[in-house]
Length: 456
Image (cartoon, rainbow, N blue to C red; front, side):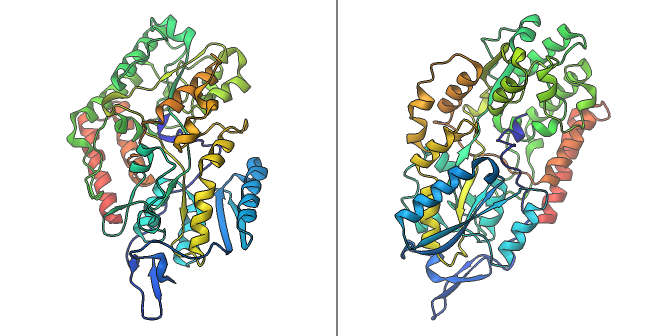
């Protein structure tokens, strides 16, 4: 369930489809004008040189589906910023994050009306950066890295129109990745809950044991590979895209076909509900009924089980998701970006940094209504995360993720929805026995390349 693990109840952000055609950054004219993403902007917003200017004026700040549950918190942050900078006004916009979010964001960017400060995920940030709509923080604020976990900051880069990796975003909050499991069901299958596997194929071997022991009475996990691609392959350190991102290369690694072979074997053996192959349902309901041994890898899931299935929560264990060949976990952070098209860029950047500083990140992540983790070093060192005294599943999850994130990276493969669906479709055919794993992987790469060529 890892591919969509990050706080799905908080955000539902679509992937943008921007191209760099006609966009990018250019120098200014004699009048001091310049362009960012094709929009006329102040020369100081682009090119070389640190951003300077007074923190004053009006800016817009856009989040995604946060106002209902966290209105008082963010209103407090805004009020504190405006108090520290009396000549500023921050207008908060909360996008519902529905299916048309991507279309609206594209339209806003191309119309030069992108919010001054905007909450984005990695695919969205990648697209906006490539088209030149976000401030290059590495140039405009060389000290921006200071508060953040070094590994997170280092890996939170996006490519600009020239293919150069730039820092155009500030890491904000992130989820974690853990194994959640029903200890009783694992024990019945002869699996020691205290010794989670260290490799993906080791986890698959445990799935197989569950299938043999359960005999259809319960299952190991859900079948739809959309939950696992590309997350599993990332964790196995399988290279999926060429260095320039223009072609798929995952078929070049023999472990990809081996992974598909395992999925086909497990599906046939009954490790997964047959009707879950094409379903987008996560394991929440079946896990809560005691019919699935492994739950979601999102730590938020632990709280969901506690609230909705207390008897199953009492049997729930939390362990480390296999690090496999990668050797550490990867985060899927949400980011805060300042628009290069902002008319008050110094104010936008100042607010973005204020919102993501250690004090505000720690305060929000302590909110009992949210199960997220901060990206600043000081926040993760807070006793709230480090001195967890409880031994209940949620306490264990919080402690485990906080430790992971000190060495986590944000490197993740970003497939468009179309490319991911094309790959998943071929894997599903292999799981149904309609194609060999090797052929399915070969065809998946070919279909992915067709789509990547169309979008380049």
